[in-house]
Length: 479
Image (cartoon, helix red, strand yellow):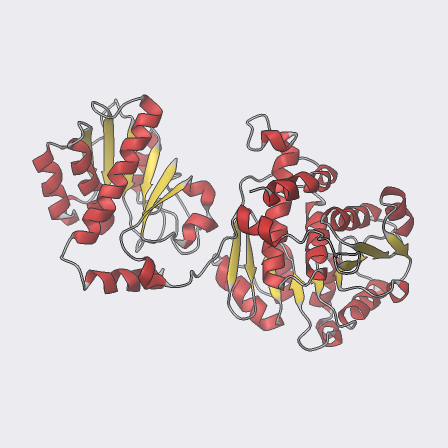
């Protein structure tokens, strides 16, 4: 957010006063008109209400209202802070014939949320909260949904849940950290692109993920395609081994080697896996995936120490994270410079770091990545991947379908397979998260042809997520 504000200030110094706001407002009005046409079949004669706060965010809404009036839209503005309203925007709306009311009219087709801008923090104040709670029409947020922290996406009280959001110059952290609050985000170019440089948070598109996915070529063999070792499962949790190893197979590994007490269960389900009872007998691998269902006893501790000392990239999940938290000296088994990816959920993160996650998930992930000199994949509805050098990739969830037992085991297997191909660890983590989340959506919808179908009403079991990986990878590769 600081870089966006700095870019805006640099641009403001070179253009006439009010230029950026009118650019933004014109783009906002254009999108509102399109939304009206999509929802009602027309623009002229439709009713739009502006919820207007103080400052520039309210000014954007008021200027947009003025442009909409010129297209025949009936525009009513409700001023939440009349003494601090953007005077030029209000004058423009009045000149265009807009109305000013204390309350929204009964008949409204769309509402613009111009209550709080990017500098606002905290929940909606009571008067604004009452207005928003009474809204029945779709809400288009101006830049960011009011009441939602624009830097972290967190909410600590009443806030807007937008049907869609129109933002200006660049996407903001909230748009990828809390996509369920923003709806689809429409970006209006106001001339900032050359000022901004590389984004603070990067999202891999489906096309980028598909292009990164390792697929066999004419000269490929099982070794060049990646040999991944899986150390997972136990007598109590053989399913974790089956899910993790099977996911590595389906993620186009050249070979999967399994080591652990669940070897028979893995062989029975995945005969192509080379399975043995001990990591010391597993043979040469190009990466290890360790932890799901492994247990936290002395034997598991030895397994983790062995895997970390082999000198190949490692993804450590579940029980492996608990072991690292309990026995920090295990990290000394790792050769300096050997890539490590840690994949905690919130509670594992607190266990690993010894402190609560807090509201700023990105900053917490970055701190942990630097502390452990590892890529930190922080699971959640929005998955955050932080590299030790400060880079952050984000995978905003399209759904909550991965929230089911065993789906993390699938993710670990996919990530291990990608690490074995030599893919850069942070990129591998983001690619794996994208594929696993898409597979969960496919499984919940009953098949790739129905992604996003309203018929999806419950999380699919992890075995179905695993089975949908092939469809997910095929979909990504064809994007």
